[in-house]
Image (cartoon, rainbow, N blue to C red; front, top):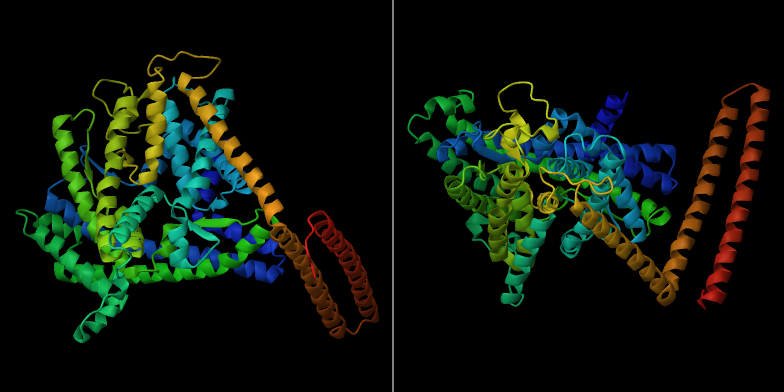
Amino acid sequence: MGTIIINFIQSFFGSAGLVVGVFALVGSILLRRTVLQTIESTFVTILGFLILSIGGGAISSSLVHFKGMFNILIGVDVTSTSSSIAASDAFSIGLMNASQQIAQTASIMLLLAIVFNLLLAGFSRFKNIYLSTHIVMYFCVGITTMFLLCGPQGCLALDKLGILAAVLGAGMIAIYTTLAPSLTTSTVRGLMHEKNMNLCHHGLFAFALANGVGTLIGKLKKGRFSSIEEMHVPRWMRFLKSSNITIVLVMTILFVIVYVGAYCVPGSGESISTILNNQSLIVALILDAFMFTAGLLVLIQGITMMVNELRDCIKGISQRFIRGAVMSVDASLILKAQPTAVMLGFVISFLGCIATMGISLALHAVDATTFSSVILPSVVVFFFLGGTAGIFGNYRGGVLGCLLAGFFVGLVVSFVPIIFNATFNTLASPITAGSAWYTDPRLEINLLTTTPPTWANNSYGESDYVLIAIIGWALYAGGSHGNIASIGGLLNPMMFLLIGLTITIWLALIIDGVVLNKKEMKNNPRTFYEYKMTNLQSYLKHCDQVLKEQIIYYNELASTTKKNQVKIKCKEKIKKSQAKHSKQIKKTNIKISLLNKQYKHKHKLNLN
């Protein structure tokens, strides 16, 4: 039974489309929409997210050949244990499937983190509701793994200690999910013209870096810069003003460089035939370029559908549950804003990643124990990270801002897998000297074969996961690695510091939110008056709508039947509905009257 529940939690919250649909459902209910309107809004939101995912999948599949060709070009075998690719999803899910202990604790931590995020959003000044729960799940897996690597075997069993670790981990994650989206708020609002939407992504730190680089370039140019989307082109090149054509051409050029380069590598013929499934190289690169562009168009269509529905649903949550709620959705949200900047940012960030790959080769040559893997570029990761970074840089600093933001993000973020590579190899105590880090008995990894699992060649790759490594190194610095000194049932002295720090931040955020709320109430009582009045008026409209629908329903029922008894019952039902409606209206009008008196006399508000 426990396995079924854990599997449901993993599957449901790992499907961000369903989570977004639930929020659309809750928002529609709080807006007091009709049943049909609620169903339609929920379904369209889920469909929009799934269409978005299909577009992302098409983009990923169009880059499969490119990834294989690039690996041939640089001469690295991706199946080798000496190479590692950033793939946070495959890595996290692989760990969960391999260790029941990690799966159990991470699932509990995930549920708590979602609840804690809603609580912090409700009581603090930061109103971000983090909807990418699959990213939250990856954080939970990473933090659980760090707790295990710095504790004794079985330390996270479902006892007091395991629950404490789950609560602590969820508390830390909730701080991140509530605060981090605010790093990009001003730029996102400028791009999307949406006050109640924000980004949630595991690359928010990278986006903040890109925003900073773009802002610096903008200041150096004293605001005199032009967006790449507005660049002047000669008349004969006007067709390039269509972003779709530009994307196809840019990707074709990139594919030609890599595909032809791989083809020129001696002895690569058989490998290329396998990668392309015996398809013509020229045909493959052309189709891949068009598939990439088509995927981007589908992704943008899904974004439009989802955003159009969520925009109204947010009002319901904001009016009834969290005043000023801000829905933080995937970074794909802003890709449609500047598609040309997306392409340029992606290409340049990929070049930055190649530069970091050279550094990882050098580190591997110097210390193959700590830096056991060579980090290979993840094309899909850098499409979303680099593309979004290009948008931020272009918005703040024009073409130069786009170029530098993309390059620096590619350069810096590529160090994340290197950091995790060193972290796991340092914190772990493998079962035998020289074995892989995941053979540490404390992790209780179920290795079914002697060959390395497929997820072992992956790693966390996005910027924000550095927080997981920081927690791991903090616990390691507690001095209990390999020799646990139990203090009051706690595993590590550093746990006390993490608990104290988490509680302090929580209290500071809540107190700040309460104080701010009181100041706003004192300085601008009209805002609170209008907020409460809107809720009451919305309820009145809902009551009128319900009565109207019931009268129409019973009148139609009475007109389609020949039985007098049914007609009489329909009339009785209408009378009861009208009586109930009168009571609801009367009670609500009394509340409105009391509200007017309270704000008129207590807050001296002029309501005329």
